[in-house]
Image (cartoon, rainbow, N blue to C red):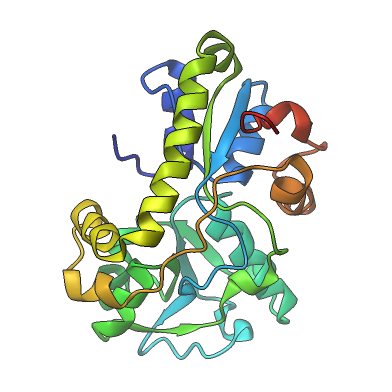
Length: 256
């Protein structure tokens, strides 16, 4: 595994061939597809509704208590056009604020607490384990779970590759799909080991990981159910101009 700063970097790695598989969010992948990059998704990480703590973590001295208070403030997101960015924008607009008056900048999720303490931003569109870490250490407080605006059954993170690679390596794609199903079963039966792995790869303190809620893990994709919400939201926010061919974008599991 190789860490990448955001979804755009993930896509660049897959398209260039420096990585065979990447894990962006759907809206980032859709922008790449519209720009002519032949990406396909073959599995998801989790689906909504999700119990994971997610939302705007606001600085303790920011004065932000509701969406309207974000106007004129600086909000950090892990990637412009990514899942947390677009859902945060929808939540802010749906709750009576003018999103055009919010200054949105990119920061890395692990910096959530530090960026708030240093007052580099007034709020961060964050998600666990980083959101809970920021709250537990007193760096900020959580307002508005923007995941509430997402249609149930919608996919979150997705595993993507290029169509050329998928066509040339069908057994590898199938193998990864089946391995992810095995991993899902293992996680459900081995909570302690799963949390130890999360702590290892996020470098967060085990006590923080021990208290976080696990995501609503799921692996199989359905073109309409998994992606329609993102397609429509991406069009509304001007990230893409036309509908994505969701059937062509989705590689289903063997036998489906």
